[in-house]
Image (cartoon, rainbow over all chains, first blue to last red; front, side, top):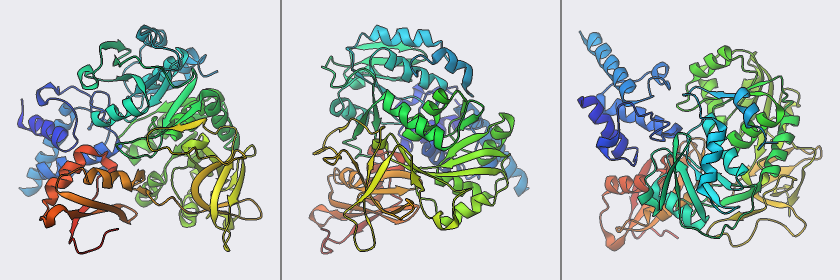
Length: 89
Length: 445
């Protein structure tokens, strides 16, 4: 289990109060279909991800595709972190 | 007509998710629950075609569907189970032990739990639509499917929606606007409907309109403001309708200046009325009417109750799509006058031409960040915390909610911990942006 995925599970449980046991949230679970996250939930998820990973998620990246599952959001976070690193070098 | 629609519905209505199950399987799934006719079924599912299949299949089995946000916490679902006498709950990944349920089944791609057998307090073809009650004591309107279809038909007529249109729904289907105005409206008009879900993204919205050749869409004022702020350019739309909160005359003018909006409709409604009551066709209305919610539909009567010197009074509405009654805890009386008008609780004026102008809403109901909420419910949750004696929640501006707290025994409150406590009990839009401790010598009542 990657640390990003683990952290996302923490956000889902601690900040969005998703009523799942942590180890029951699969990386492929749909945030909408399986975890029931609604429009304000997605706004909260974006804010918490930005805060915990010290990244900025652009409006263009705030899409249902990127915010589909833990796997897709992990890919986005990795991309944002890489872009930040490149910008710092 | 709605119950007979599923085979046609799957041809005309689509979403962006996986393929939906067959309607017959969903219908059979509800039949297997073997509930008494008139039993209420709570449906917690995200925006999708499958949600509509469930809603219709529940109706077709003689049950009473009640849609609710899929993010609803177990504590609220349990409270609803008791207060609205819910007989079954349907949603993804339901755990029957949380609801003291005995039976776990599968309907479509969702789980279904049947709760204790209770005599159903509703009639077949009734529909429950939740209203802005308190978190611990949610209220609902009991409509009939016919009254909802009637309202959708009046709205279609006022907005000129026909089978030639293609509608985009980005609003939650558990709210009356998405469910009745857009979904049932599409079913009975014969038009196509594309359902999308959160998160809302302005660029994606524009892409969808272009790729799907959308001709009409309904949005909230919050989304409209977001589009204006970003300067989003949409592909040409035959019509855009806005409802759910106030739109300022300046915003109406800004929207009308966009070349991609041919017809702009500002609507007013409330769940109890089915929901739409009036419409302002802004593209043809005089500028002086931009601060109004237009005139009532032709089949709807309105009057201002006991107007003051400025003509301000409660708006009363008589509509063929009115709810049968309201249910839930703390409903001490039904909101109807002796001559059959619905008491809206909203203060309005009505001019000689019939234009209705909103003045104020009932004291405890606010709209913050585009979502309706009941401040008393937030206070009640804060007061559940053992260190809190009294709470008072107010909107500090359009997008910010502040809760002031008075401590028991002059304690110094751990505000972060209390905010976390409140967040665990409230829906996200109800969580205050700021929590402040007030000294106990500051009088709070």
